[in-house]
Length: 88
Length: 402
Image (cartoon, rainbow over all chains, first blue to last red; front, side, top):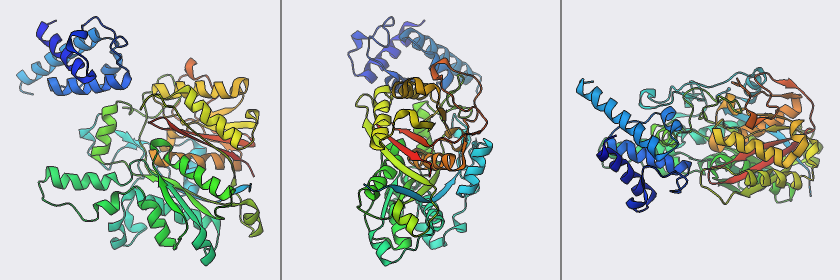
């Protein structure tokens, strides 16, 4: 996955959790970062704003780790830019 | 301490404009959940709600009066009118001077506020309507009831999110039981179908894209509802002396705070509220035959509530019946406790336990007898109604068949 996108997701997580960016790496668990379910929802909201995407509830429910979050965002971002390229 | 009788009931909800229609739907297991008509559904990820269908204030209020009253307070007043009429009580001077009014609401008139802010932020107008404050305040329901009936006793409003009207009824119950007043009108109302409020719920990702299926393994979240419900409470002896019809008795009220998380429920906190209501009513847990559950159909509420019921009732949890009528009238937030109190009282009075509608698949984590889809004939003596709120503020009411 693109390094730059991963970094953006990680910094959104750090900013939303109000923790230092160095502590957030792709292999950390939600639990290690103290992210509970409401925090997770706050992060999804911040990511929607950061990437100008909409994360469906069903997809949101499947996310269990930081890595899954990054992968999910990557898919949504590329789907959104493909749709935009087609002028939809 | 005095015994407290319920002598009047009033309800307006997705299940109809009065208590008779409400009960008829519950008994039939008919849901009032449908595509929302009050808002542009295209702007939302969820499409269904439990609205009061085709409601027009003109059927209940003069135009000028309606201008002054937000939809949520109109519902409070409509339910109070029905409850007072149903009680047959004569509001003479003495009654009006001493009667209490206790209402609950979560968002109050935020729909009016939402509309005012559209004027300001979206339409760029420099001013908002001067009635915005008077329509928005959460106590408007109690205020309009007091004005319409000339009731000048203690009146106030409680806002504890989804527990609001259970807390309100509980306070009124204690006031009547303790001799503070001989007459109380208590309940709650809510009207949430305004885009700003719905967007805030959408962001929490707890609203179902489908319907409300409490305790079902395939449940997918709550469905928002609206409406109003009111009870008339009197000391039992006085009610009997005036020949009133007694719908049932309130016997216990319990409260607790989770002190854990602002949105996640707690087994321990819920359990303490139930236990406290039983203790307040001097009831052995084994005497409870029916629980009207909080049962929102979110993943976490239904599992937590099941665990709390098991913790309080032990082996008896497997013998008592539990249902969530939110599957039919939706989650009316601050009105939920009052709407469900009426469902519980009527279940005891009529000997029919309303079902959990929309149920499809058993969930091992919600292994209670949840009365799936079909009402059941049963004659329990005692029943409990649970309300657990965001913010961890819980309120539980206990009722007895009269």
